[in-house]
Image (cartoon, rainbow, N blue to C red):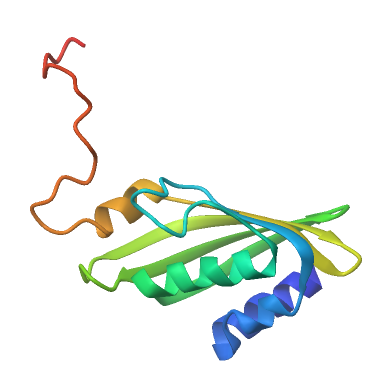
Length: 146
């Protein structure tokens, strides 16, 4: 738990992704849950190069406004971080504030697996330009009974 707490402190205090990159196993699996066609960072990435690509995709579209860790829970090789985050979409200027859960699995003092959960629907809405439909047409007839 202290290892992960230290990473979050370093990341949010300005060290950024490099504080995390140096603590990854070579075979790390890094996942973000969301629709990748709407949120390019929200998919699975493999290895250190994949994690670097995740941070590049995230940083290209989003600016972190605030990040507050509320609780860390550790058991065996897992650490769960519960937090509140606020991000601004760079193109639309819209904010998304969301509760967030990050799940880590560790091996030999390195991160081997990460998965983040957040309000991806709110993120899609924030990433959608005004006047554009955030979700593709479902193909339903519009009948409210369907």
